[in-house]
Length: 117
Image 1 (cartoon, helix red, strand yellow):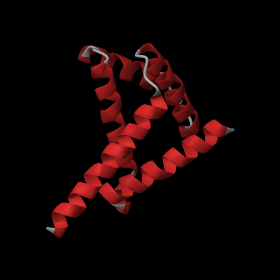
Image 2 (cartoon, helix red, strand yellow):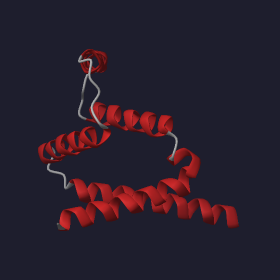
Image 3 (cartoon, helix red, strand yellow):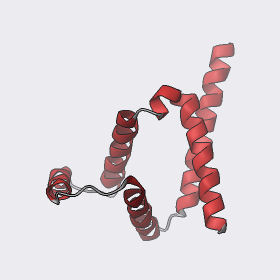
Image 4 (spheres, helix red, strand yellow):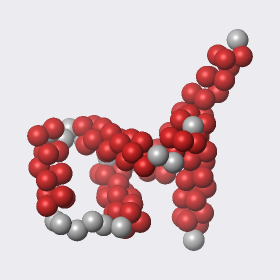
């Protein structure tokens, strides 16, 4: 049960920071969410030294199945596979996630400070 509390807490903080950075309209725009996620997934693939030529092949395989997963199921699949990647690279995925929140928080604080000056 503790894991669920941590994830809920993280999700709430992340969404709050995204709203501050991008605005409510962007956070609720499915195209923005979809494109931002795809970009980050490809960045992770690249960081893992994946070959760009593989991206099209994987996309074709996904789209050729003819059935669309529910979003909740797909999110679970992503989290499951992300845990495997974190394990492979000896990374605490929750610590990495909280590090990202801290970075976003610092960026927002810096923007606010710049606007006051």
